[in-house]
Picture 1 (cartoon, rainbow, N blue to C red):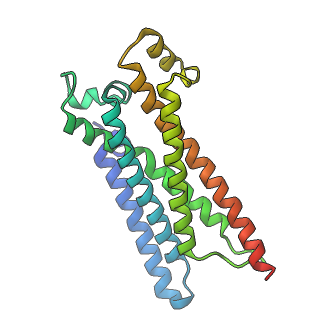
Picture 2: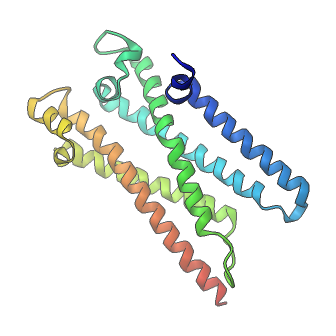
Picture 3: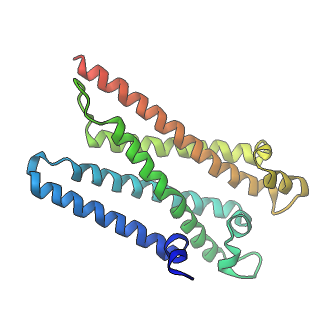
Length: 220
């Protein structure tokens, strides 16, 4: 494996990227705190982003640990885990679950960062508007994850009933040809799709609430 492939595609490369990014945030926050003391703000922003990434990765790990119990085929065939685990069907349950968790971590750390940045931008200083507390922002992060979980549940139901076959020709073929225990496979497909949709809608709702809350606060 070349250095570029290791950096972009391997599990250890992912950990290295997350670790280096976290270290950069910590160093920049410490510098800001050292230079500006009680007036420093960046260290709070960077800490919030680290919390956002951590919560999103925890969600991704739990989501895919559950999903791998519903359909090992989705990960083994659909996510290419067969290349890691080698031949043997069904694969070892513990090894598959560990690999699925890694898939969840890879898929959600960047989503957590994007959501965190979006909430910070919505909380940027504006004339005559008070910024919301970071504890409030963390609470909104939790609400986004709850929305994602609700979306995942709804998506799992829709997928298991075949309502999402139209969205992907490969999924439609799996349903048509009765491959890979299609009901379970499509339930996990819907679970992941619904999670993303729920996360997007949850983020949009939280940003809308933040805007209204800040306007109300400014008028008090």
